[in-house]
Amino acid sequence: MHLPTPALLLLTALSTSALGVTSPWSTTRSLSHMARSVTEGSSHSHPKPHTFSNTTLYLPSIAVAPSTGFATPECWALTPNYTIGTDPSLLGTLDLPLGETQTASFVHFPEDFKAPLHGPGGINIAEQVIFLSGAAIISFPNATGTITCSIGTNLIVVDISTVSNGHYTDWKAGTSVVLVQFKDGVVPGHEVVDRSFCA
Image (cartoon, rainbow, N blue to C red; front, top):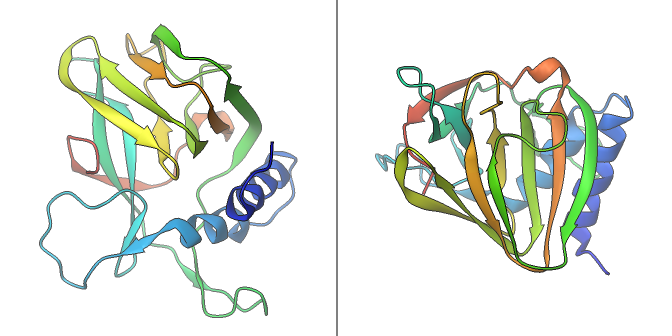
């Protein structure tokens, strides 16, 4: 299986982070290649996933509704904390740390798979799910509508079993993702800008 160059860079960056190599710009460098800019001062109420608006990075999340404890989609605006790249290969780029990680793994779905009710995979800790190929449809037991994830989606999942009943995922054959668990479950600083998936 031959991964596209950006995907390989992302997998390498996340793997080094999981191994404890201090390189806060690595993950963001790869994400920045996937980012699509939006116009300054846009009044669009639903920012596109992993887009830059001035100095804000928007990422979709599966969170937990405070009032009910049910899993629900949210759109997060990560706290701006950019640095300007000075390395010759990153000169002038915007770099934003995405939090400390403790493990990272590559997962491939050779066949269609309908996952039962669940929270973050693996060790049930808040994580990022980064789509390298394929697609998945996410639905919720206590909410209508679905979320479709595809190549380039960087989803933060925090509906762990101790606080939520979770969500369903319908994985499509050929889907590959990188799962990156946040250290101690601590997610990046953010503001919830919408109680729906970034669309």
